[in-house]
Length: 89
Ligand SMILES: [Zn+2]
Image (cartoon, rainbow, N blue to C red; front, top):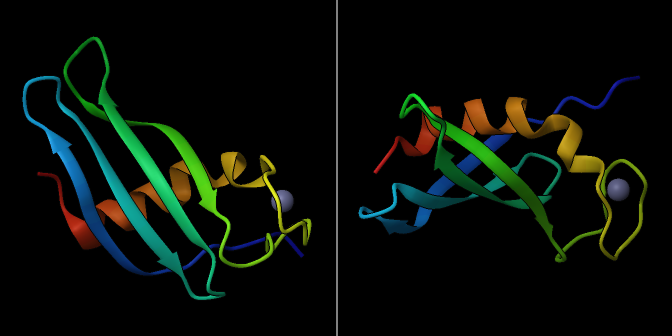
């Protein structure tokens, strides 16, 4: 079954108004914690540029407890849920 991330908590952890860059830490229902890094696209819209899984729990997809790139596939999905919860700075 395809992985379906569900954000249960999200908050803005850093914000740079000068560059428009900010970061959100999002906790998922399966206890995975991700850091999302946002920037602006050429038209000034907020876009998630990176997602990193914080190494608190093994990856829910590949079960590795070290760095992997699985969350990248779910960047847009996790980002939209996180933004809904945390808002934009
Ligand atoms: Zn993984």
